[in-house]
Image 1 (cartoon, rainbow, N blue to C red):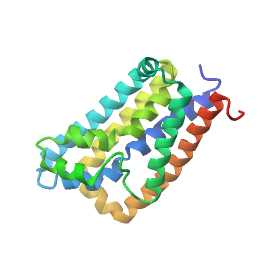
Image 2: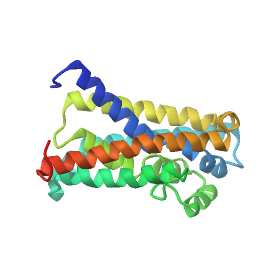
Image 3: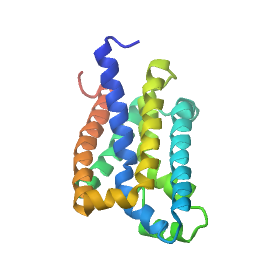
Image 4: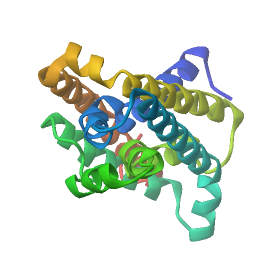
Length: 215
């Protein structure tokens, strides 16, 4: 149980910001428009819905099953915190340069997605939305044991992020027209800055739990 109401809200805020910034649906707008360039508005909404559902399903499954996978493979929580922090740090540094992380999207995947009959699951849902960084983060946030006080804010954060991705994708043309390429890059840099700070904190937590550094 949380020591205070404030700490519970702090965890919820960290969970949402980490998940949303790693999924980063705004940065996927160019790829979504490229993949769906020849599709009708109805088809675009269908692909956006499939991508959002895939993101929600994948992140929820790993949040629930993450602790069991860790036990099965003998992975300790500090190791996952450090690994997750390093992945998030790489993503954050790429976002600071207004670059789409290679772990979530490559030019080849975008081209292949444009040729698929249904790209909503792959590559839009995974790895463009639910990439390695988001997957490792939900596992770290959930911790070594399933806990209701942790699960609720994490699942709510995943749901809000997935729903936001659907709205952003369905209005991708309008979002890009309003923000422009410059606006999207500015948002990516701001998200990257905050994500980098969270990544460093994850790594510090892992080193603290290992006793390498003091609390």
